[in-house]
Figure 1 (cartoon, rainbow, N blue to C red):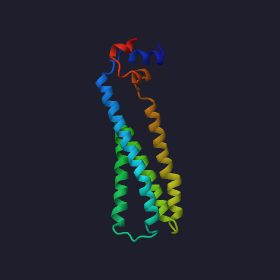
Figure 2: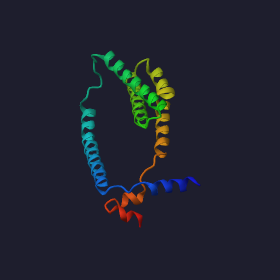
Figure 3: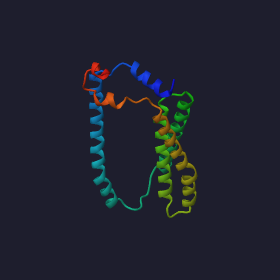
Figure 4: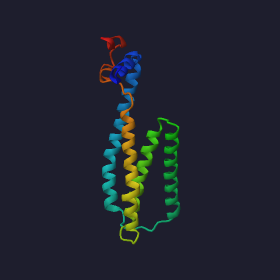
Length: 169
């Protein structure tokens, strides 16, 4: 039996989604997308304001606490990703994405804060040869894991408002 036939057999054996459940999923999705859209739109003028008003230099207090705290967060994210991966838990996807984003942020902050100092070459090398390659590797792996997930068929999603009996026609 081919993989396609097996997948079709599994989908055919799965119960039809409940209309109320599909409506709740659609409502939550719509609310989430509306919230993200409003936040993205509001972030544009805020970013422009910061770009115009922030000083180019600033004396920082608690520098050590900030960087050590960030690196502790990165260690927790990496360790969580490794542990969830070893346990073959689906949450490894979220942990790997969080780890990759923290690695990208770490590279950005390291390089941007080292501009104009003797540390720029070390920061750039770590970003180019360690942090960013690992981040993009994790993102690629996550995309591969997501492609293996069994998503609802377009037909089920498209006719979610219809009765379950209509799915069989």
